[in-house]
Amino acid sequence: VQLQASGGGLVQPGGSLRLSCTASGRTFNRYAMTWFRQAPGKEREFVAAVNWSGDSTSYADSVKGRFTVSRDKAKSTVYLQMNSLKPEDTAVYYCAAGISVNWRTISEAHRMDYWGKGTLVTVSS
Image (cartoon, rainbow, N blue to C red; front, top):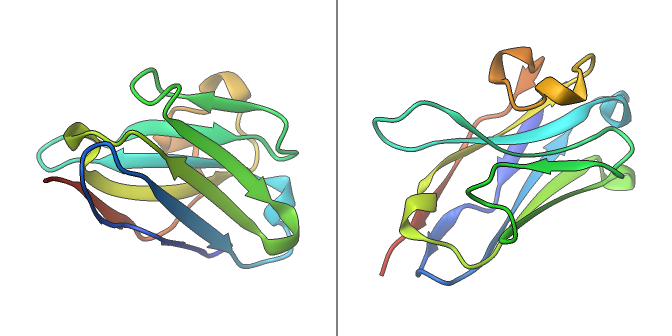
């Protein structure tokens, strides 16, 4: 599985962006999909996840109520809609796929099987 993230850019505080992550390969629908981010000088952190069927989601407390994760199986794509962005959301955002991940440990980066290259999100006035 190869993952390609896109949609990053520069946005003002309070603005919105939608990130996309497109997967190659026929097994996309078997994977739980996640978003992580890494700010300069900080460790990579969990942002959001959606299960293989799309009917369960999980979010970091810092983004709950502002970010929404979803997937389109027909397009083999997972999205991260980010609203009410804050300067502290500035980071490189990565999508990742996990096939045999227990949902209770979905926020643990080392459990992911595949990673895409990141896309930079900068929130600044």
